Length: 279
Image 1: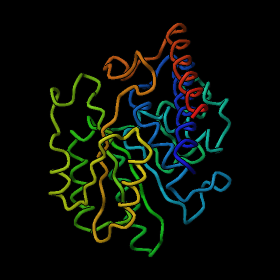
Image 2: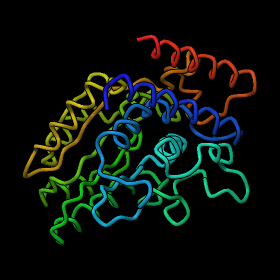
Image 3: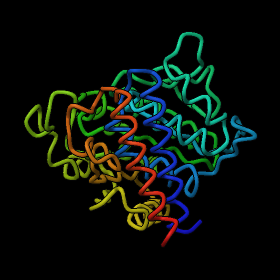
């Protein structure tokens, strides 16, 4: 799929995120929007998956370690055909299968329930080890928040993955610079992120713009040919990317837009979509 097509899909994914969070009157738009391009690249280009057979044995696995950005994952799953896009409007509603955090028992395409920060990467490491022990060909991907990596469990998992040389594992850090309480370097700085993972025997790829499809492609292509060690892709992104008033605003970490804000956000995304269609 070409870059323009992926950008158009990512814009639709963003519309789904904003629509879901607005309908729920709750949720986490900021970090979902910063990772929308990454979700799109993984599910439409990188991973071996089949929406018609979500449990196929040789599928690549994805674990959303920063589980609160479920609206981003749900939107890409819906756009990829795992369930109707219309269902995004039921996010967090009583009786809906689309809970506030990913639920592997009820949502097609979700490989691991997650939400408690730090735990998702441990599950992903376990999946990767299982693949190695069984001689299976699948790859495992997990997305962490840069605030999340302040959790000690993340580094226990990294130490194990590096020690076991899990080259079927790709850890992605969404480095948008903001967490719920403010800037990550002011709350409890995890910097330098690359040197830390390097010390845990990871192959490190720094991506200057994680909202750029070409740079994501180069990173995942490099990860695929890396042998003998796990890979971490540390991507610089913009929190709230694509919605003018949400970009780089910490207040949009976990807040839903009101009706007026929703209309403005959808207008921003509509214009972005029109611009892409003219390219």
